[in-house]
Image 1 (tube, helix red, strand yellow):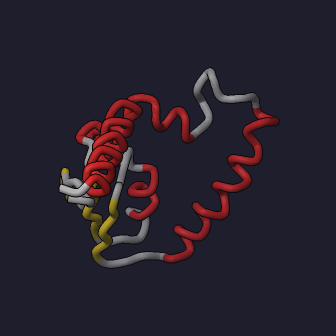
Image 2: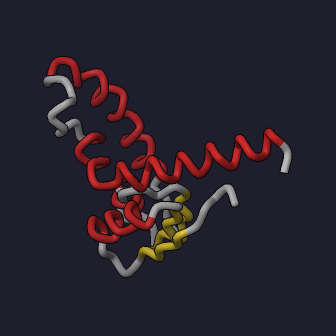
Length: 118
């Protein structure tokens, strides 16, 4: 393994460990409910930026079979299920998939634990 490949492998391992560790707090962070997140005025830009992203995803009206890579805690899976026949949700962190399953608990979601870089 070259030095560059080793650095890349280590970085990917660190990223997976980060998301595994952050899983319990991720949704609170995303929704700006964490104590360490600033108040409503400071958080407004976050919601202003996130709103068009949600609208764009909703506007796609994805039907049929949807493959969601790095599905995480299910924030996006939840929206995909509004129009998709089914979703295959892939993530490297079993903790994130557990949160996704708890949020969506829908028989139309198939969960796959996999490292997308491997």
